Length: 107
Image (cartoon, rainbow, N blue to C red; front, side):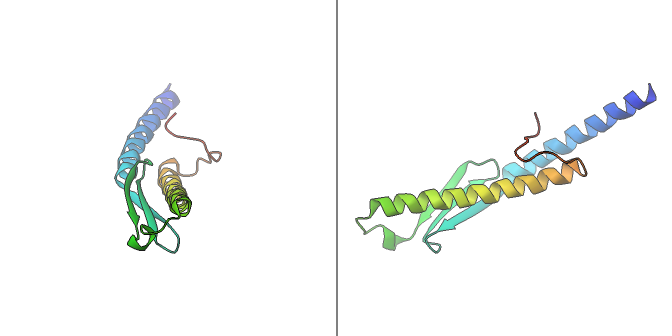
């Protein structure tokens, strides 16, 4: 039964590390940009939108669709960066454990 005890201890350690990683991820912020930096969107590591910055020169235009597209593009850029940071942070916890893309921890 010693192996089972060791496995349980390792599982508890990994669970603690996972909790710490989730805290670090929640505190992270990433910024995505579009339109050469004219629109920026900042997300938390958990994907919550924190801020939108729009260059004032875009506000006087009648191109509503252009501004909407730039906001979406900046959000998608920030989301991709956040996902990359989450993967890097989780790789620190899981170590050599190879998980398939899109596999979310904890379950």
